[in-house]
Amino acid sequence: MVEESLNYNNVFHALADETRRDILLQLNSGEKTITEIAKKYSMSFAAIAKHLNVLEAAALIFKRKQGRLQVISPNPQTVADITEYLKQYEVMWDKRFNNLENILKEN
Amino acid sequence: MVEESLNYNNVFHALADETRRDILLQLNSGEKTITEIAKKYSMSFAAIAKHLNVLEAAALIFKRKQGRLQVISPNPQTVADITEYLKQYEVMWDKRFNNLENILKEN
DNA sequence: ATTATATTCAACCACATGGTTGAAGAATCA
DNA sequence: TGATTCTTCAACCATGTGGTTGAATATAAT
Image (cartoon, rainbow over all chains, first blue to last red; front, side, top):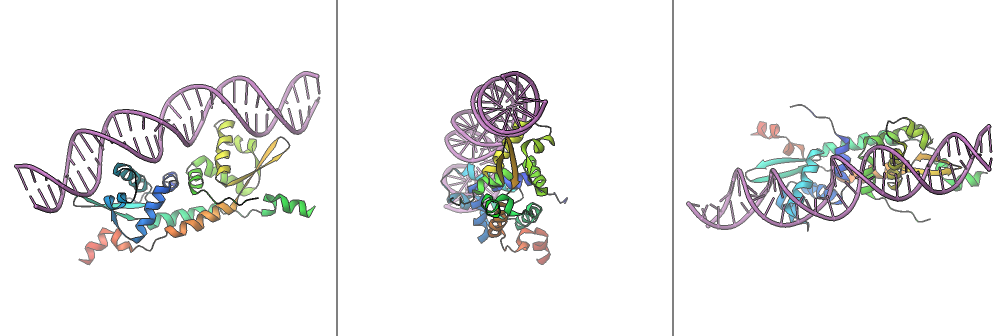
């Protein structure tokens, strides 16, 4: 099995949706089937199934077929990877230059 | 000045684009004008200006008008906030249940 | 075998996104 | 003033996104 490297576009895009972030949080309490997940939202079953496809493409969840059920579980590694990735964006920028008030105070 | 709370949809959407992530990285080395930023990409000036609007809407950058120039600087606070926000998604999920091999080994 | 349940798939729709070009504004330079 | 530079804005276009409905498929229950 080849270890695919993360597609950051996919991951950030998947996270840029309230419903998908909410689904991910639900999975904190354990595995759920698609039907169980879909019950909590007012949108159609097919819409939730699509959201799960987006989350799967982003490697944020796993799907495991069990009989006619699809069991969905979170992939904590991807969130960890994204957090690690974001470190390169934590720039050491002197905040004074972003703050007009301080610049004025100093002059 | 009212402190707006972060719009996570906007932030993740802004990060879900290679060009925008690259622009953000460029800003690690300091402030830049729109023209300076745009010079490094093959797309049109207007396209880069749009990307900067998306980054500004996400509070990932600041814009400061200086004469006819727009000076762009990074907003490190937003990246910090997003990293903090992601902590709630770092679920303590027993990885054995995500790993079929281990389940088989144990049986 | 029939029926019910869980999921997938395809077609469709309204709207957003990422790009383009060209014109219009402002600030600076000669 | 006139020309140049930096930026903004509007219109346009192709494609993607988030949602819908309905049909098809596969498994499970009666």
